[in-house]
Length: 289
Image 1 (cartoon, rainbow, N blue to C red):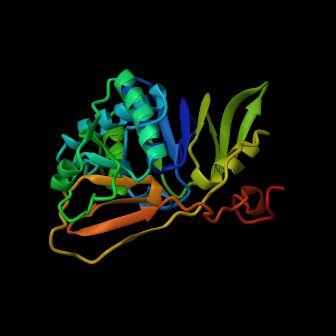
Image 2 (image 1 turned 120 degrees about the horizontal axis):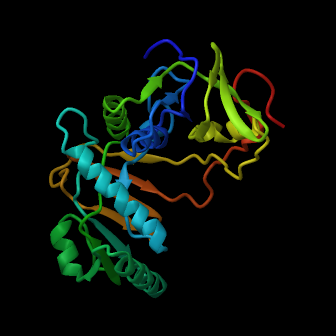
Image 3 (image 1 turned 180 degrees about the vertical axis):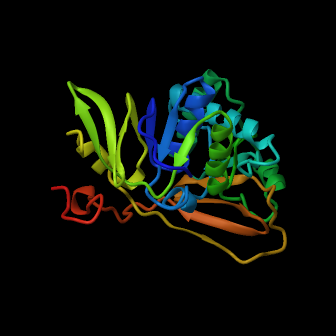
């Protein structure tokens, strides 16, 4: 933390994993004078710190697959630093199909992975059982194995981004909420905080649940809706260890991974609680609309 500067080249709004990852990527690419602003007193104080930390590369398009593969490459690079790493565990993942429709979907996803150059293979139930001895795979109609998947600790990832980006010259300010973005002749000229204006040439909106409000300050209505998600962590149990693969069972809307010697379980809620961002404000005051 330091006194608020008068100007910056690029300002990133939001100190979660995405915002800090953007700051890291920018300075690593050679961009100078990058400043990140976070309204809370610490980084990863909102949704990032609550994330489950699963890292899966098997996607429905080549572009998304390659983006996920680049993320894994980044996590592996960060993990090599003993002083600031994301707790990256490359334990692989098992994706389980319980019906024929899902088997066909997995086949399409494998074709995409093959095209993207991602190592993925169908394995027998017995092989899956050997990788996850406590799980019964008798009902599985297909199991897709990706050895380079894994999981990490989202808060540790965020702080690893911060540490590495700072070494390369990025600046981070916490306790600094952004109130508006200044625009002149269709170009960004700065941002307004509680302690004054910071001139800049570019703004990156990584404000999470408040990204809608930040965009509205320049007349853009982003089609985003915050959705609540839940997972739970069990007590410690024999047979559970941090090197077990991540498991995804889409037909049961279930994912799980090890959490030290316990189990972290979550699901894809079909009717998750959502909040219209127009109904709550960026700061004290009435809703946006």
